[in-house]
Length: 167
Ligand code: 5GP
Ligand code: ZN
View 1 (cartoon, helix red, strand yellow):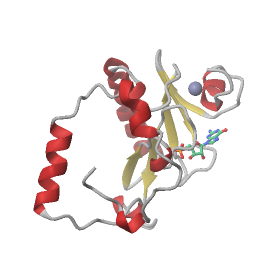
View 2 (cartoon, protein in one colour):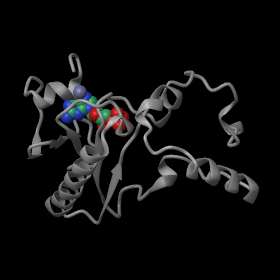
View 3 (cartoon, helix red, strand yellow):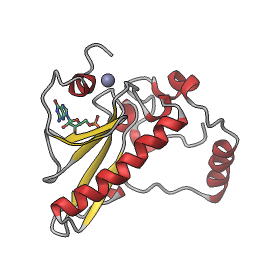
């Protein structure tokens, strides 16, 4: 895709520090590492989010994520590893070419896991049942529903602490 930064990296027009390459995905160091060795794994073909990818290609991408995770872990002698993948503005995705972050983690960094992303929410059992039903009955072919899922208004209509889980 024209103008896409990561497509530019795939094409070699934008310099990067590649650490892995195969026929489909590549991995290179993040320019603003969260820890030394922080790598990004991307498909060579342009897709904006994970849900835009055909299942087979996302499977291939994840195999590479697993390989790069092992390489980063050994290469940095990390104590742990975070794999983070953000889709859409609401999730904080900045670069619009699907990517997995592979971040080596050390016992002396923040050691934050999910709490570094979002605080936990209180949900009663009826709300949990309702959301579980909504997910179970949803289609897993989401690419065609992309706009509905990702192009929400920039500012939520309700304040953040009043997010309505009963959509
Ligand atoms: P996102 O926030 O979209 O999940 O992550 C995008 C990541 O891309 C960020 O961590 C950012 O540091 C990284 N990034 C942005 N521009 C460049 C670049 O030109 N080269 C490399 N290697 N990484 C980049
Ligand atoms: Zn791209």
